[in-house]
Length: 247
Image 1: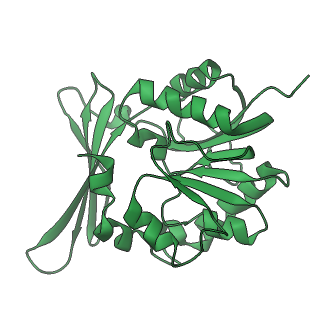
Image 2: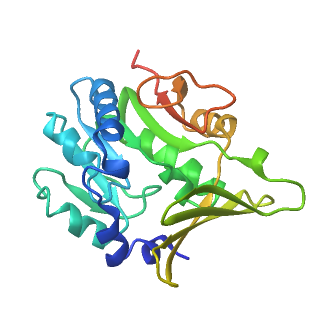
């Protein structure tokens, strides 16, 4: 499964859920608030900008936002909300694509760095962020914590969410740090719709080392965008990396 195959026109159409899920105000509001604060009045660059879930409200807050995106159908959805002058987008891989100019903030939300399926690509992503930042600029990553404690010996799959109309199941390849997320949507009929996406999971300590290889230092880590304490029980984290300031 290639990423450009996963994020096709149908996936782009289903991605937007205005007012619900990842678009709910209680989820999106703290994200935009924190990113606007970290931008410190400068420009921001979103890796994997998608349909503009975060970029559009951030731009509406007065932060100049540009994006990198691999999927043309996702950008087509974005263009129904903001034109190229408002949110410029470079088509390409977030590990290698280059956007003109420099930025105060680069950000990568909702686990998307794990869409890069090798450690080398993930390190390159950090280096690409550093390439776009001014001295003292920040790179922000939102990422889930691998839930291997839920994986009993001899098992290769876990159900991470089961609710009416939906089951989320992950299958693991622990040798390669790969996981495939399976999303089953169903109703009262016998039919179900399956969506799948491959990922390479990253431990927080490994993520920090990737940052150091690209010249970053970890500035902060919290369990969510509101600043909750990150603990051993946290299921995800928001990590802020910063480049050294100019002498």
